Image (tube, rainbow, N blue to C red; front, side):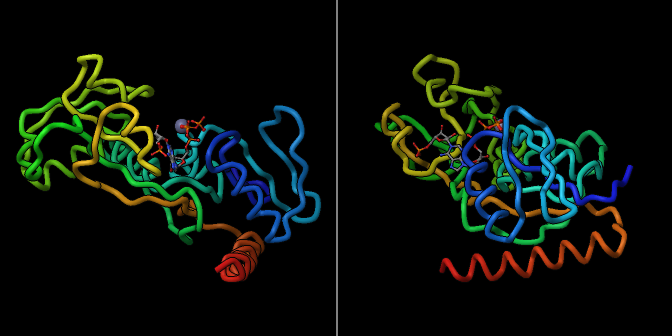
Length: 224
Ligand code: PRT
Ligand code: ZN
């Protein structure tokens, strides 16, 4: 169902939302975030912003429900692998990496445990929200493991006796430290990215995307 207006999915509330809104505004998109709206119409361009949970953005793009989205590579790749495993559409076009949302997805273990390399994770149970990315990494290394799927409080799993190790996002490392953990393996370095669905858009919409990209290039370069 294509609409006349370009649809961009962004995180409603969270670590990506503020910087994402600022970037769009600097690119000249005028909008007013009021209340709990799902859709916000830009005032000066044929653009609608869809405000959603970040978890929903990859699927909205891969199903061609929205045209553009801003999402962390960690979430994008996890959902892509999950959908591919289920035989669902998992294609998208990465238009550009953005200059925010930086973090790493890392395996962490007890800070006092000895660690000589991935083989030390053999047979361990790893608590994570990213089972697909952990599996891809461990399979490549040939290390056997099991998972414990948690959507929150991943960092307390070892102390709670639910798992031997965790795989979670890290930025400053303070959360790991506060929970008596240390980083053992970095499995992905992630940033926010702008993605597009693989649906063919009409010429006007595509031209609008090109214009936004050119502006974005200028905005990001000006900050560097
Ligand atoms: O509600 P919704 O589902 O939309 O949001 P969410 O809670 O799932 O996501 P949110 O807003 O927390 O994060 C959105 C995206 O921001 C992530 O998918 C990453 O791409 C990016 N990002 C960057 C981070 C971090 N840095 C980060 N540090 N996401 C989460 N964290 C968490 C991490 O999980 C851990 O609990 O922060 C803690 C670690 O931080 P440090 O500084 O103590 O190391
Ligand atoms: Zn989320």
